[in-house]
Amino acid sequence: EGKTTVQTIVVKEEDLVVDAIAKNKLAVFTISKEILDTEGKIVEVSAGRGFGISADGLVVVDGGLVPGKGTYYLKNDSGKFKADFVLVDKAGFSFLMVGDPVDGKSKIVFTVPAFGDISKMKIGQKILMVGSTISSYIFEGGSKDMKDIKINVTRSSAGGLVLNLDGEVLGIALYDDNKNFASIDAIVDALKAFLNPATTTPAAPVLAP
Image: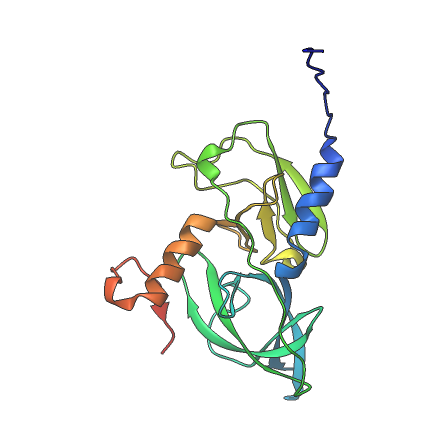
């Protein structure tokens, strides 16, 4: 009586990885777009991946693969949907808005990831990139403003989620020779500027003509 028992719980890193991915399963979309092939026929090709960024249907994607207006589609477990191009940001990402279901009846179901804080990352911590495959990296410190992460991004993983082990999104993976990451801070700033145009500054995203 009066004694306290202390129980130590060991959490394996692999369990954290599994949980981080599971938390964000419903946030992920695959993107496709229509282009003209060499014979002048309309074909549908991959345009990477993306993830939900707001509850009203905005999805952030790789701006290199979705650079402007066109015919785009978003697909996840709830179905395939048309997508409207919204804007491209100088940081390298674009926004698409979920549109009508291709089959005329599917209902969109998705989640928005919890936002992480890159400035709280410590050198040596693990980072996950969830694209066409799942890759892990060690945080090396980023740039001076702590808004950058060193990752290798293939075209098929472009637009993938970049997560910490808590399952919080740190940014988006970009398929670009000059930059392969855009931080969640930059994405949120662009989102705020889009939702509140009265507060837009010269550094805000530019709407497509």
